[in-house]
Length: 146
Image (cartoon, rainbow, N blue to C red):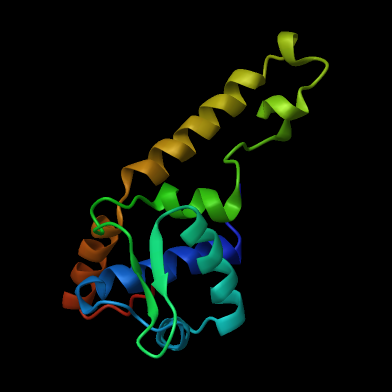
């Protein structure tokens, strides 16, 4: 499974909001410039994340975006799923795309285990965990990108 630019940029933008969590609403333009993501693309990402309930926004001169919950409550999976969709490594795991050989398929359990592993990883990491990792890298003077 590959994470698209939408997923990667979404996590990076959410990390930016997590790092600036106590600053209130952050303008889209500021996040866009800091993360080198086009305004239009970031806006599309934030529409999905707002719909998923992980960010809130306000319009106007003092408007911007912030996390709906604290960074320790938002998991990477909460960001990736609305942007990437299903974590199924193959289409046949999706009940809507049932395979005619589904009942006797030997590989179904392998694909299911891969999906479970991916979901366990993305649900085990919070934005707070990423902040801690970022801080460690920063203290070590290692160039680290979010």
